[in-house]
Length: 202
Image 1 (cartoon, rainbow, N blue to C red):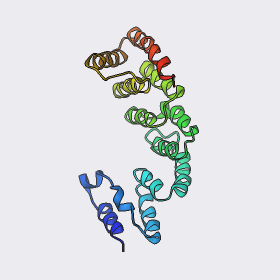
Image 2: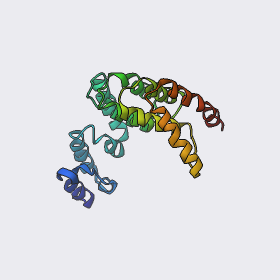
Image 3: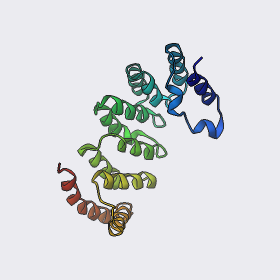
């Protein structure tokens, strides 16, 4: 038994807050082939939380597993399809699964949607994600989702925060985007057009 496997089993058998802290990368480095197979099987039982480490262990096999599970979970209001979609995009670069994330968003429960907003931001930013964040700002009822979409929109557009003045401007725009007043939101979005043109420059 390798030291890495011993460390993995120790973390695997933890409970409560220690278990919630997750695994450290060193428990996956130095495993022999039989141990990798065993660890993969154990992580399968901890899906979706173990999916990132499945990709670390066996990327090709993990991609097959993730795509299968993603298909099974799509459309479930309290499902975790977005977690698999994020990892698929991360490891394969296939933006079809980013599109799935955006398309599936409205079908999630209000408690899950803020997490989906964050997951979409962790994928490559492009015109589709920028349009998505704008849509959330304008139509969402979840205050948490709106707040996250507002910040992610500004960050995707590379709104600067280097100086105190810029930080103040950033905070003011977040506040406007989070406003309950639609005209205020629309004015804030209009102000962001200049950043949109700047962010598209090489």
